[in-house]
Length: 266
Image (cartoon, rainbow, N blue to C red; front, top):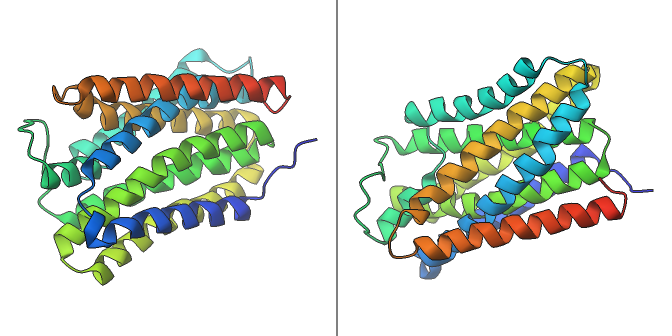
């Protein structure tokens, strides 16, 4: 019988990954490693897309139950997608890796934007990190160890390049590692705090509401994955490589999900 990790275990793990990844670019010698960041982003996008479509959204439908109305279930996915879209449109975007990439390499993309306030970028990323904690908290509340571990894998695969980007962006904007690390710390705390908070609150949720939370989170996954990788795919210099990274990692995630099913973990 699989052992279900506690929300506190997952909170500590996500905090550690974020802090380590965010601290790496604070070493100036590697602060401009844009190629590595692009590769990591493509990997994360593939994992997120597969996780959203093959784990989070199907599990949300399953938990919500057959009696739930399809419009409400589909609307929850759409709500998650639109929520992230509104944040992006309000200037509280999450795609800070584009900022870092543009600082490091000028490719002439018209779609790369520069928020006027770096604080808004950090706020946007912190809100996005909180949504990661929401889906992990919901997964733990579902009492399925397989779903929890698959969701955790998806979140961590995205967390590493995002935290890396936060460190690089903050170092560029603030000019000193100490101030940049404070931004990394704020970002890193958002997911573990939300994991514990979401898990605590969801103990009183019925199955239908818990399913809607999972579906909302699936919508945020889809938005983040597509927005993260589309700029690189449209780039004539590395678009094909970015697409290959996404497809390979989506296929890898599919293999992991099938293996988990064979082992009775999902």
